[in-house]
Length: 253
Length: 253
Image (cartoon, helix red, strand yellow):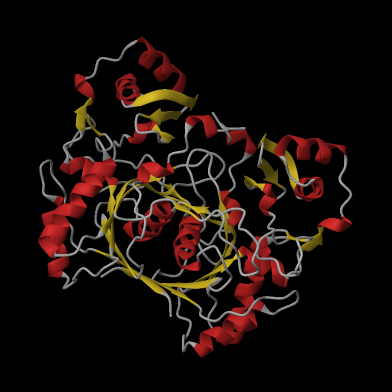
C-alpha cells in the first residue's frame, strides 16, 4: 500500500544566528524517538535557514537610492525596504500599489525578493530577513552534517511560500534542495497504452515543499521542520536550481 | 506529534464513462480496510473524473476553423486539437512553437486547456479527454455520495498538473474541491511577535493536490486516488474556484 507520512518535529526552538541546524534537528529527532531511514526527506522553512545564517539587515542602516525612492512611491512600500529588495534582485518584473515582483539574483521570480518582515525577533520593525545566500549549498551542507551525525544522509528541501501569477494564495516552493530529484523529466516515457507522454516533467521539490507546508502553517515558527517518509532514495538527484526556467523560455516576462 | 498520512488506494480499476466513482472508491477502501475518519480528504486525478463523465471528443469529428488553423501553424499542433482547445477557452494567453497557453472557460490559465491525449484508451490517437464540465460541482456531488455510502463526508480535491510561468516542471493543482478550505486568508493575523502577517493567504487545495501528486505519479493510472488523513475538518470550506485570480488583479496578462 503506497504511503507517505509527514511528521512535524515538535518543539523546535527559535533559531538564532550561528545556530547549528543539523544539531538542533538531530536533538529534536532524538527527543521524538525518530531514527532516519533511507529515502527520508527533511523539509525546512526558509526562515530558520536564513536566521541560522544571520541573513538580517536593519532598515535604519539602508540609504535608499533614486530607483528605490521612485519604486517606493509607486508601490507604497518603505524606500529602505525597496532598496533591500533591489539589492537582492536583478530585475523588476511587475509593480503596482502594494506589489513589487522581482527576479531574485538566484533566478526566482517572487514578491519582495523573499524578504521577510514578520516573525523576525527584535521588538521593533527595523529588522528584515533575506533569503539564504545560496540555499542549494545550504541544503547540501546540512545533508552532509546530518549524514555524519546520524549515519544516513536525508534528502533536504528548503521551502518558502510563493504567490503565483494566475492563482490566489501562496504554495510551498523549493528554494534549495539536496539529495532529491528536484526536477523529474519523463519526456519520452510511455503511458499504459504505449503512447508517449506529452507533459511529463515534474517539479518534485516544489511538490515536497507544498506538502510540508500543509503541516508547517504560516503564522508561527512552531513547526519549521517536517520529515517526509515513504519515498525511495533519489536516483538522479538535482538541486532546486534545476527548477528555474531559463529567461529565453519565459513567455511571461 | 503533528502528522499527515497519504495513502494511495491500490488496484483502482481503469475508469469508463458512466462509472460510479463513489462506489469504486468505497469498494477500494473496503478492500484496503480503510474506514473514513472526520477530516479525511480524498484527492482524485482529474483524468478519472473526466472519464467517468464521458468528457471525450474524437479529433476526426472536429472541423477546425480559421483561427484554429492559424494557431496550429504557429504552434505546430494538430488543427483539430487546437479547435478543441479553443472550444474550451475564452482567450489565448501565450503561444509559441509547441506551446499554447489559454484561459480555460473555468478561469484556469493553462497549457492546452487541460486536454489530454495520453492515457486515453481506444487504440488510436483519435480520442482526446477534456476537463470535467464543472469540477467543483463534481467534487461536491462525490462528497455527498460518499457521505451517504460511508456515513462521513470526506473533503474532495480534483487534481490536475499545471506548468508555471517561471519554473520548470508541473505541480499538482486543484481544479475542483468540496468540503475543504481551498483558499485560506490569514491577513490580519499576527505572528509570534505580535506583528501583522504580510503574506498570509494560502492555496491550501493546491498544496493538497501537490502532496497527493507525489504518490500518484504521472505515467499511469495506477494510483488516481489518494487519501490524506490528519487534518482537522474544514471550518470555512471554499470551492477551488476561490483560487482563480480575478482578471483585473492579473499582472501577467
